[in-house]
Amino acid sequence: MTSNQHRPRNRSSLRSNITVRYGSMSSEQPDSDASSMQTTVISQKRSYIAVAVLCYINLLNYMDRYTIAGVLLSIQNYFGIPDSTSGLLQTVFICSFMFLAPVFGYLGDRYDRKLIMIVGLIVWIVTTLGSSFVKQTHFWVLVLTRALVGTGEASYSTIAPTIIGDLFTGTKRTLMISFFYIFIPVNPALGGLGLLLLVFLIPNPPRGASDNQGGATMESTSYIEDIKYLLKNRSFVWSSLGVTAMAFVTGALAFWTPTFLFRAQVTQGLRPPCNEEPCDPLDSYIFGAITVVTGIVGVFLGTCISKQLRDRVPNADPLICAVGMLSSSPCFFIAIVLAATSIPATYTFIAIGETLLSLNWAILADILLYVVVPTRRATAEALQIMVCHLLGDAGSPYLIGAISDALLKYNPESPSWDFRRLEYSFLLCPFIGVLGGLFFLMTSLYIKEDRKAAELLASEPQGNKGENIPLWTKTESLKYCMYQISLPVY
Image (cartoon, rainbow, N blue to C red; front, side, top):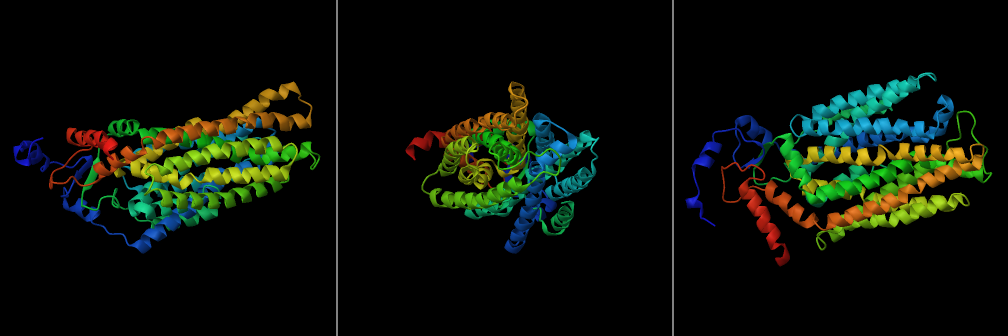
């Protein structure tokens, strides 16, 4: 190791005369405009208002995302479509959502995030309104509008969590994120209100504002460098795989559970079959109410457990997620098996399973925020969204429906077989849930060192005032390697 006076001076002198790169850090601003941007102080009151607005819009997003599931029986009868085609409605929505998420992630790390969300929300409002007027002979138009709705949601869901991450830090950030994600389990006119609130009440904080207390600034690196950084981040990779398994399970459950329970009651003779729309939506209401209550309880419970354990157990967050996934899977398995004989018992185990599954939502978002440097969070959100939907809930509703249709040929005339074939298809979900729990256990092995690495990179380099240090230069790589070597000492 050499002292500071033996360092080459030409490199830092050159840096003082060039524009700071994204992902680099400096205690001096490159120009007056950047200085005014980085010294912007957003009041606590405005930050709380911003979170409230973002939560409201997030509620609308998830209400719209699962609207189809609530009226699926009526849609099947109105358009005369089988289970696999019904699942396609959710698949096209998720596909457009996931493929556009990386685009908005790239834009969100480089351009005005508030403006991007405003444009996306306008697209969402227009396409949601348009899908309400599709005629019976134009099913393909409904498919198209569902795909376009995903465009609007991709712009918002990718960027909104990063704004919260830049408004708060520490346990307060965890709490605000929990409020944001609590609306996952829980329109156009309401969307218009959300658009107005977004325009007038949401600030656009500097990226990394809450993490950078020393005055360091961050500028952009290339998209390829961002992706390479994320792929080397083991906590991000394993947690993204865990989220993918979780998305597979929740996507299939949210889309098919009301129809599954209706068919179970037809099999038991509790209800007559629905041969023309509108069908009785009682199961959708009951399942929706259970999902809202268990979602709220689960998110708050997960947040409280995380706050209690985080200081004592460094890898508490992924362990909580693993426990939630592994313990919810048996509950869902029992619920599926009991549906043929007892609807109340099925609802009971669904409620327990959803509560355990909901422990994870806020924690997962917080994990991403603290293992990824601030200037790459939108890209990380986008990449995680694309992967978890591509391999998760983009395909699970269609896959469950396709398996159900494939089993139809064995007893095509039996109403009870309509229930059984969907039941056998549904049994895939608990096994995917166990796989997700294993992914979170793998995350727990690396979370401590990856979090420390992100903190080192996001903090102002000590003893280098005025120098611009790009992310993952040789100096920072050496710091990271030295930190990893010191882990056994800790």
